[in-house]
Image (cartoon, rainbow, N blue to C red; front, side, top):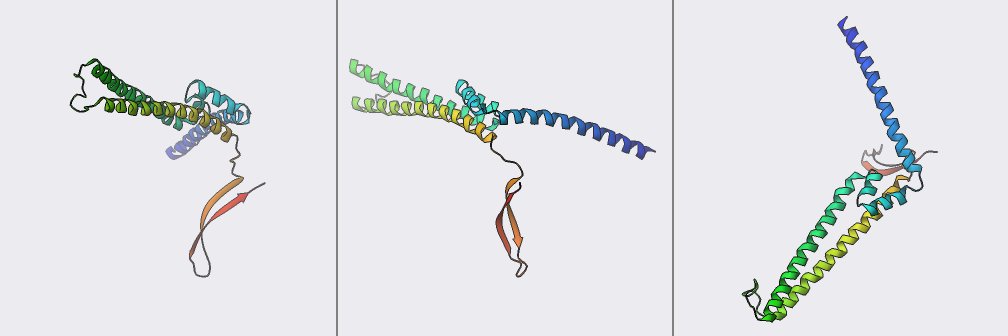
Length: 185
């Protein structure tokens, strides 16, 4: 008696859970299909990503690229601030020495004023490179959102598949590796 009751209850709960999962999947599929069929999806994603970096990736549900974007922007901003501070210390030390005050932090390390100018130019060049990196990563963010949205509209159904396979010949039973291309119409 208990086993029959257990079987009936398990079937009931299984059907109930299965029917709930089906409705959730269909809602997600409907939203995804709407985004895939919308021809303006790539331009919307690029616009969103241009306004706020990473928003285009959220729109296309490619969440894994957001930490890469913000990591790159943060690192380039950090190096911009660091190189600017270093350039300013060399410049301030140079200005002090021109006024005749040799009590800067580079007094024992750097003897000539030309070396201070070289240090200032060195850090200025790397500051400028960090600005280029920042804007390059920003533009790649917009490009990634646009390309990712275009790839959403690419046909990747099971009718078009490329699968690796391992086959053994009947003569000497040596394994043969290859690729299998399936086109179903």
